[in-house]
Image (cartoon, rainbow, N blue to C red; front, side, top):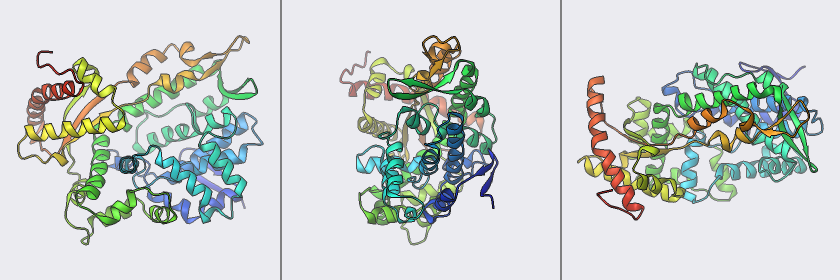
Length: 446
């Protein structure tokens, strides 16, 4: 009997016996409870899809890429790596990852968890050999295989992006993420490079790649950085952080305080979105910040964006303070801004004020470096040099801004305009002054 899954994005997805055994494990089935876009369904009601179907879709595209490039020897390991690439995600996917990193002081904990799960979890003992595990972890960490294999799994054109753009677009009910996957795959190429192999694209695939970049740009602006999506993500992160630091919820602390131990991993893998919400709202959980914020989320009484400013519109010294700060310092600056905003609005709890610095990798850091193989046999060039659209897309993607969210209410659109104008009038000089002072060059006359 053929092993196949009917997928709304790719049609029939075939899987091997080994892949099916992994999919059937409790470990992998947990991903059904972790939504791809956290609580984006509060603005896009159809966005209820999960990491489960995304991982299966990424596996499918990895197989298509391998077949197109004649990577028959690496076909199965590429598919398995793509299938397992998100196995380390916790509740609300990337959202709670910020809490893990904040509490541990370490970066890329999701990747560390993924590697440990693949290397040690008993559910994978049957489907995978020890060598399989080592190779998958090595590929996902970028430590094994040649460049083309690493690029397929984690790079400007990786199978992760190729799947989630189409999938997120479909389930959000928008067309922004649609691009010609078939054409893009058809124009992929291998470029030999001093004993290595690089992932490249043929010259006649420029338009397909431009379409892919435009899709990422529009999905970033319309979905991933949608105002309500950023508000809900920020509320989840703040609720969990306050639940640990202020409410002293012990089970929440144990879930998000990373430890390199079997006990931590076993507990971590027992949680998904639904369980976290149920436990926080349970009568046994004491009333506090976490319960209050999650209750607001479930009733869709969301924090409002009271202020937003592009970083390039800040005073030059204020902008410098933010742009030159590392992650830890940026969080400290955000906390100081929150405290200052609360102080300027008497009676407002600073814990309910969220300052978020929104950034996005430029296309120059991602797709711009993809090599284009010319049909005339001349030396390959980077995509940024060949694409007439690249410069304008890259400029738009790089836009960064600072936003302030808090639990205020508007009576109507006119009330919203009046209040946001007043907040802008008050907060812009306050934030500029605070950041200039932190740059060490404060002057009220600047």
